Amino acid sequence: MLTKEILETVREAIRHPFSSYGCYPVYTVLADGTFLCRTCARENYRQISESTRHDCNDGWKAIGADVLWETEDEEYCGHCNKIIESAYGIVEKVNPSKKDHSNKTFAQFVEESLDV
Ligand SMILES: [Zn+2]
Image (cartoon, rainbow, N blue to C red; front, side, top):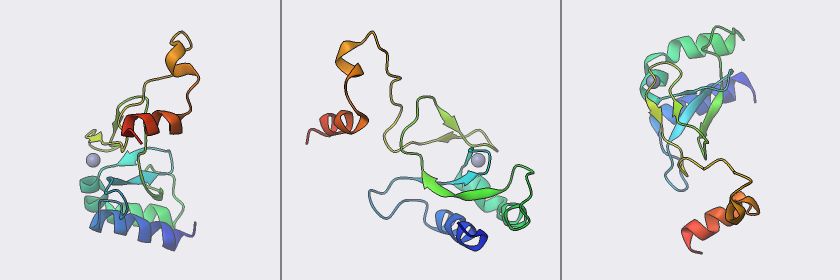
């Protein structure tokens, strides 16, 4: 993605923190893979913009904004440690000893949870 597009995505996430489909929370994603809550993204937008434009690896470089679809562990904001809400919540790690879960794909799991 072009730097300009990345920053547009970040600004969009600050202005409209929920995805247009499904209304899931959208967060800024930094180069090191950490998520940034909306408050931190807004308050530090200047820094994010600078670091992203100058390709500076100081921890503020953004790679875009996205929904945290699923997570195996609690995810926290890389700056203030506020919890980052995931769209599907915490997905249990697949435990091979649990026969009933081990053969299901994530899509099947979602379908069943949604009772489709
Ligand atoms: Zn934060």
